[in-house]
Length: 82
Image 1 (cartoon, rainbow, N blue to C red):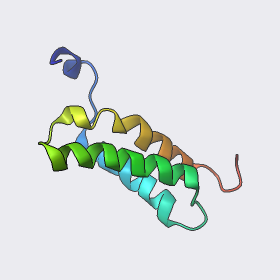
Image 2 (image 1 turned 90 degrees about the horizontal axis):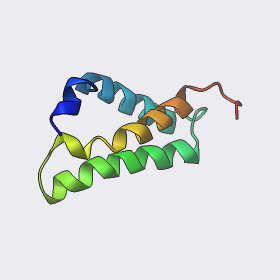
Image 3 (image 1 turned 120 degrees about the vertical axis):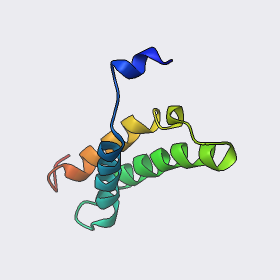
């Protein structure tokens, strides 16, 4: 498990920026969609529940990264684009 961290990693500030972009997609009325909200809330839930129940470990964030990235992509698309 330690070896992959030398090849692939995501800095915390970058992940925070992705999460904020997804949140903006939920808050801004012109960009608000149920798809982005579902993905973003799922990413937050995946990160928060293990921490609330047990302890924080970076491995709990890994499954949330794709969900947060898709939510951010939906938030950044042009309005009216499918």
